[in-house]
Length: 425
Image (cartoon, rainbow, N blue to C red; front, side):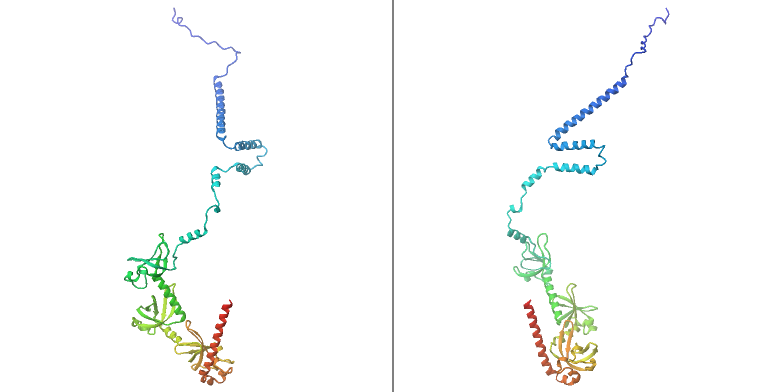
């Protein structure tokens, strides 16, 4: 019994035939099947997308749905031949043109067009429109003069009705020049006042007004007119400094330099005294008012003179253009054209420096300090002043009357000519 023979032997598989056909490998079969499933799935997804697009876009214009595929088809068909000739700009332009032709106005635009109305369809009254503008127009611009009545008095100022939607307010320090202790006595209710607008209306429609600013403006206007006329004013000195003295005139602060005082060395002693002064500089923009006591003496002398008056003076200097004559504090000019009606070789042939002469005043300008003199009007025959100067000077008073009448006649004729020009124009 051997141990090796008792165990059964394992079966061996039969060997394949040599010429039998081989089956394809299972791995290759599985890979082929997977590719088919994937392709079928892609086709199914594309079909689903196409169905979805048809459902969603079916409500829109069919022309829009067909336009894009047609264009794509054309591009694909002609890509080999004409793509090189067609640019991207041409393609975009063609797409935009095709889309614009098919765009229709939306419902909101149609509703707006239906509801829009022209101006003529509304009730329009021009008079009411202008009245509304006038009611809403602000009252009181800066620098404007307004009139109104006092409606309320407070401790810090007063309220004045000037016709606006809100009253104007005038602070206490703007109620006038100087110090006002009792506003209720100075501005009782209902009092009519004239004010100057210093600040335009605020958000509440209220403007700021001032009586003081209006009075100062009037004072500057008055001072300018006085300066043009060369008037002399009397002022009271109320202070001094190293450069001169100060004073007040019509609410304005004036200054008199030491060089323009008769006694400039002792200018402190002029405080509280009243002196005559004339205007040297008037500048409202810079609030500058400069006066002169010395010029006042000259201006006072001008006030004593008039055109056509016979004046006697002394020759001060001789210039190529004429003589300067001292007229007791002021100087006049005897121009060479006003010396004689006759021809002369030299001015010294007629008058000499220091010589006393008589002459007529033919020009007077106080603002510029000019006095024009004339001796030719005192002559009888032309050149008489050269041949018989003594006779002309002796008979100057009688001849001056005749010359004055001639000047007055010329003045009247000149005024009549101006009136005729004004009437004709």
